[in-house]
Length: 274
Ligand SMILES: Nc1ncnc2c1ncn2[C@@H]1O[C@@H]2COP(=O)(O)O[C@H]2[C@H]1O
Ligand SMILES: [Fe+2]
Image 1 (cartoon, protein in one colour):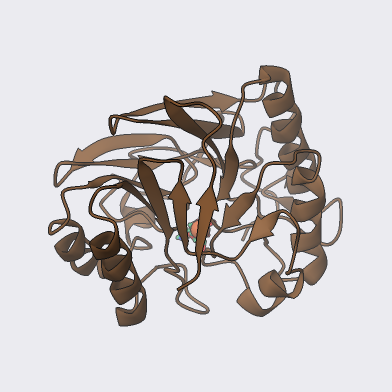
Image 2: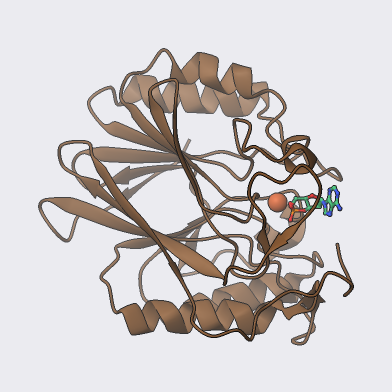
């Protein structure tokens, strides 16, 4: 497995910017439940620029595309090209990996699944996609890759990234689409105390829990948001957002979710859906 080394610009910590669930289309006016996802994606990019907070890398945790087209991925690449920081991405249930890879190699977007982050951390990006269905599974190959990475660097704190949530988020309609073999992921994690957090997307909402002694974080989409703790499908009128994660030299994670201003990205339930 190829490993990427991300240099540490600040001796005390490394900062990641997480962007997730962009659901982009080739067609610039492509919309999901009434929200033009290119526009909301760019509103998040502009929000990050307004925040003017330093970050060392971008992590994009899946559902980059809604229509599987190569150009939808090019839209993502063009959007983040305003920044020079490297981007690490992984597939969600809506992604189509052949076209996702068709825009690589790219100067900025890296295909690596293992990243040595500064001096004290590593991050491991997993593929939890099951072609054609919304739920996720981590294959034996992905579990072996994770275990190999963790065993290789016992002295580095570990952040595991994947698209699907590896625990019940609290909404029945959504939890049917969680990581179906999450017990197998947790069986591996339980063996490696250096794992500090699991970071995911998919549920289009802010989640921050401790599970098996590990922090589990999910982050708002850059387009529509799902209502937390709702057993039936329900949209939330919270705005699109992003997350910063500061990984400190002593293994702490300082994280915050931020959202765009205004109300131009409120979804419409009766609009065209998934
Ligand atoms: N009304 C619904 N009931 C159940 N699942 C849905 C509904 N609407 C969308 N989904 C699926 O649930 C998934 C959760 O988020 P995704 O964006 O991955 O894609 C979504 C759809 O595949
Ligand atoms: Fe998803």
